[in-house]
Amino acid sequence: MTAQTLGNHQSTYDAVFRHPISRNLQWREVQSMLTALAEDVQVEPNGNFKFTRNGQTVVMYPPKHKDFSDVQEMMHIRHFLENFESTPTSSSTDIDDAACRRGDRSTSVVK
Image 1 (cartoon, helix red, strand yellow):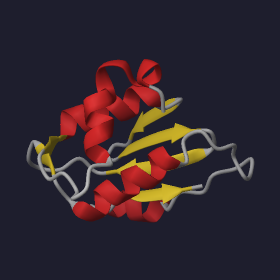
Image 2 (cartoon, helix red, strand yellow):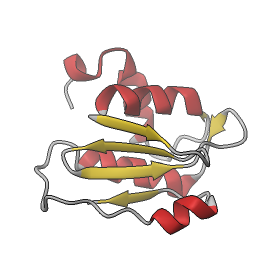
Image 3 (cartoon, rainbow, N blue to C red):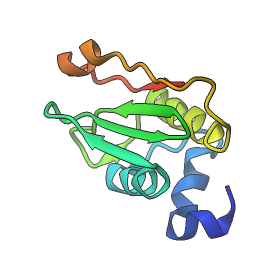
Image 4 (cartoon, rainbow, N blue to C red):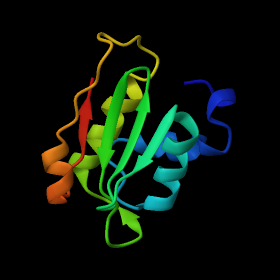
């Protein structure tokens, strides 16, 4: 990603890729960055967010607290952002809707 593409979200983007993993990112900053970069954003009735770009989707459940500190979720976001510029490998994207409806607090990346 170029700094021009990211604009105000550059510091959040950098924090996602920081080593060791940042544990003090705020959910609203992560959500704002993904909303700005995604082609499609859907909010499900159960509170899950689906961010889609180039045929790739990441499904997230917002944390109960303001900080976004779950390491596994951060890794899913990293993978999503790493593959952002790639072209889709198929014309359809399948998302585990059953897990979303159950309200699983996990994040998943679907190509």
